[in-house]
Length: 389
Ligand SMILES: [Zn+2]
Image 1 (cartoon, helix red, strand yellow):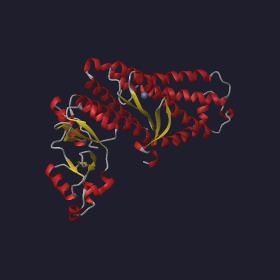
Image 2 (spheres, helix red, strand yellow):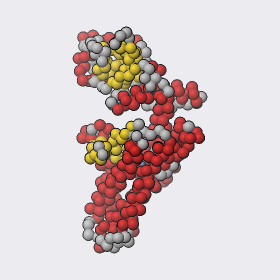
Image 3 (cartoon, protein in one colour):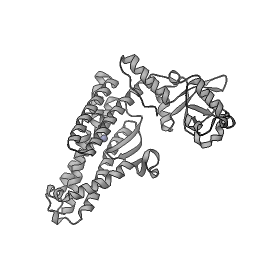
Image 4 (cartoon, helix red, strand yellow):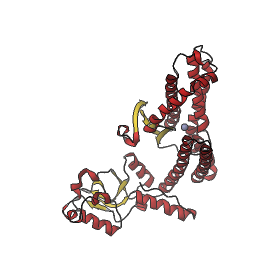
């Protein structure tokens, strides 16, 4: 992933109503591909639009480029429709990321009422459909062959976006609408499982079809869809489980923390004692300073560890660690940590007047354990496994 794309491999293009619209590097990889594919088929494309290719003034490559930009613009409009409806229902949109296979709106405080979620999900495909219809209608108004080809194709792109996204399976918008419809009767978790299962079966069928066509691109899309369905099921399950837990229920105790002043040898001893390889590093006043992992120690030989303090490792151990409280709702706290980019929460407990002590830590290991236990104990069958981050 090139560095210029920064956090999450994306580059901020512009802002609409203070929502950053970002391009993921996969989008920039696919645009030239689309341009080349389209320009190679330009003659046939013009005929389809009912235009004589010879009467078109712009060269095919320019058309390929313009159509690729059209795809990108259509996806922006589609995502903005989701975002604006989300805002209308009290959601907050953190950013819109445009990727190879469409866009992702990162919405915080996602509307959890089924009706609001259904409307938010349906807004994207509905907007693409309306836009496609409007473009196709206006195509007839113009005499210029160039303009007619352009409008014809832009409308086609929007129809494809609408059709693809309304499929009733995760991770498509239609899967969200389906879940909202099922939630009333089956509950959110079961409704998600059904939408995700349809998504996975659909993705496998699509992948097999793509393989029979000999298209690597279609197989990749199928893989992306399968993963998307899986992730959606896991995220919903995680939310459901965490919504009913406090940080105190999840945290590892005694708190796996170590002082900045400790030596590396002491850190190794503590890792052995607590059978845990990641320790939250705390400063003099107990404030978190980072996370110590085995790879930080492996560069130093055994005699060296006795003489070297954790503080000497400097920025290498720096990692965001969020603060939380023992009786705080786990979902609220972890969402706050995620916004700060932190994988770890240092859980505090009041001790005496105006004083806090570190009671425990919630990190990727604790989350994976909670999910695995919850899956087996409540459902009596295989739990969901999260890949520890
Ligand atoms: Zn959508």
